[in-house]
Structures are given as C-alpha cells and as structure tokens.
Amino acid sequence: MINLNGFTIQLLLGAKLTLLVAVGALILGLIFGLIGAAATLCKNKFISLAAFSVTSVIKGFPELIVLFTVYFGGTALLTMLFHHYVDINALIAGIFALALIFGSYATETLRGAFLAVSKGQASAAQVLGLSKKQTFFHILLPQVWRHALPGLSNLWLVLLKDTALVSLIGLADLMNKAQLAASETSELFTFYCTAGLFYLIMTTFSYVAIKFFSKKVNQYEKI
Amino acid sequence: MGIISGTMVTIELMLMSLLVGLVMAIIMTLIYQSKSWYCKAPINVFIFLVRGTPMLLQFFIIYYGSAQFAWLKASPLWMIFKDPFCCAVIALAINTSAYTTVLFKGAINSVPQGEKDACKALGLSPFQSMWHIILPHALRIALPAYSNEVIMILKGTSLASTITVLELTGISHQIASQTYMFVETFLIAGLIYFVINMIIVGIFKKLEKKLAFASV
Image (cartoon, rainbow over all chains, first blue to last red; front, side):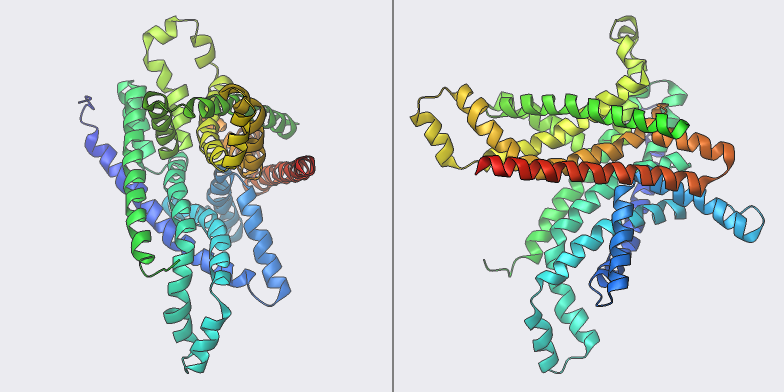
C-alpha cells in the first residue's frame, strides 16, 4: 500500500466535491440540453438558428476558456453592473460552466433522439385523447431517453473528467486536494497517480452502471 | 501582439502532438493486429488508463510528477521533462494516440473481409497487405472521426497554460489579469479557437472529398 501520509481522507473529500460538481452539472446540463433541443426543433427559424449558433460556438471553445469566461468574466460583468465588487461563488460558476458545455453537446444528442421517435407516436397519443403534457411525459420522453442514453452516457464520462478543471478556479476538488498533498510532501508523482486512480474508479464504475442501465432500458427492444 | 504569438504557440503545440500521436497510434494499431495477448494487453491497459483520467491530470503527472524522481533529474532525459512545452506535447500526444488507436482499431475491423482475403489470394505477405492495402483503406474510413480528434487536441492545448506554457489561453489569462478586461479577452481567445476549429473542419471536408473521389 502506498503511504499517503494521512491525506486519504482529504482525497476522499475532494472526490466527494468532484462528484457533486459532476452531478450538479449533469442535472443543469440536461435541462440546458432539453431547452436547446426544443429550441433547435422550433418552427421559428430565428430561434432555431440562434440555438444552433450558440451551441456550436460553445462547442468550439476550449473547456478552460468557457470556465474562465464564466468565472472571471461573470465577476467582472456583475461588478460593472452593481458598481461594487461582486464575488461569484466558484462552485456555482464551475457547475454552470460545465453545464453549459454538457448542454451544448446534449442538445445535439437529444435533438437526434427526438427526431428518431416516429411521428405516429404523437399522433396516436392525440387520437387516444391524451393531453400535450401527458403525451410528452408518458409517450415521447421514455422513448427519447432510450435513444439518447448512449450519447448522454459518453457525455457523462467526458464531464466527469472535465470536472478536474474546476480546481483551477480554486475549488477543493480531487485534483486540488492532490495538488495540495503533492506540494506538502513533495511526492508529486505519487499523489497525482493516486488521484488518477480515484478518477479511474469513478469512470469505471460509471461505465459498468451505464452498461447495466442500457441493458435495462433496451430490454423490450426487438431488432 | 501577445495574442498572435500565443496563437502560433497553440498551433505549433497542436501540430507537433498530432504528428507524434499519429505515429504512435499507427504503431500501436499495427502491434494490436498480432494475435498474442501479451501484445494486446499492454495497449488495452494504456488506452484504459488514458481514457479514464482527466487530461489535466496527465499534464500534471508528466510535468510536475516527473520532478519526484532524482534519477530522472540526473539523466539527460531531464532536458525534455524540464521544458513545459515538451511536456505539453508529450501529454497531448499520449492522449491523442490512445483515442486514435481505438479509432483505427475499429476502422481496420470495418475493412471488408473480402479485401483481406484478396490480399492473401494475391500472395501478399501479411505486412504488405496491411501496409499497402488495409491500412490506407482503414485510414480513409477513420478520417471523418479523426477530425473530431484533431479538434479535441486543439481544445486540449489550452490546458498547456496550466503548466506555464504561454499559448493562447495562457496569454489571454495574462492580458486579462493586467487589463481587467476578462470577458473581452476570453471571448476573443475563444473566437480564435473557434475560427481554427472551422478551418480544421473545412480542411477535413476537402480531404474527404478528395479521397472519396480517388477511391471510386
């Protein structure tokens, strides 16, 4: 066993924050993705074009630049607006920035999934007298979910790794704790590799869970 | 102008790591075609390790982590590991080589079996058929997906700023903290990345068209 000089608990705390940021960004990002997909599928040309350009610009920006723009830029903007210094919570900025990135990619995935559900489903629901809300939640969404799952699970794995970036705006996540422990003990390689092991455990666990879920979701699929 | 020199460093980083990564990927793909498990296992482990950890962590392990070893510091290899630019190229190359190997593996599998049989029937050696027939075909199949990889690496170069390389992100961070124009500077930097992105997509579209025509 590697001697971690009592930094194990610190690393675990960091991993907890990493998971919190990842899950927070996943939930907010899914909401962004749904809004984005709805906007790109909108009949109004202006709205769909706007949604399309915003998501492609965000996808073209490096993740680090998005994060810095949200965190530093957000602070600067709010300070200018309120005429006194406003400090943005790094946690909120981190989650928001990662959600923006996740949402931009999810827009494309969800859009494809919505298009993959055949039009007959909605018509059938209408004929059966279901309300629009019922149609969306009980008929369309379960099928969209099935089509979108492979794409979204890939995005989740990318998101989980992207959370390492929030250490750069001072959040005490796994990466940050590893840095702290490394500089304290000057055993840099050991601690960075340990952090890597933590990430590997998280991604591997996610991978196994995704395999399980996709089997479950597709159990009625006949091809 | 700082931004222009930063852009040049970014492009340099991208091209160098893509070149090294591509060569590594082709070598690993060729080794992977062997039937013995001890050739395949190390490559699988390598891919698993690289794909399962954040790129930022890989940068830190290579640049900061290498300083832990006294023997490395004493060896001539230290010339490479003490230079942040070289470390960034190594990290990016390792990253792209893992993802590209996965891509090529899939592409080689999707080369029609008939083509492989035809090579055998013509009496080509395994190396000849791989080098002259299967690999060129596989590269063409992998081309559209490879453009995504190139864009990933372009975006990945921004992480080099965390190990003190003054590329586009690093320079714009510096400018922003001197002038307090955070939004403007980062948006300009982001737009430059976006434009390079578009150019890459354009080049690959052209390349695809050209290669598709050649294959008919």
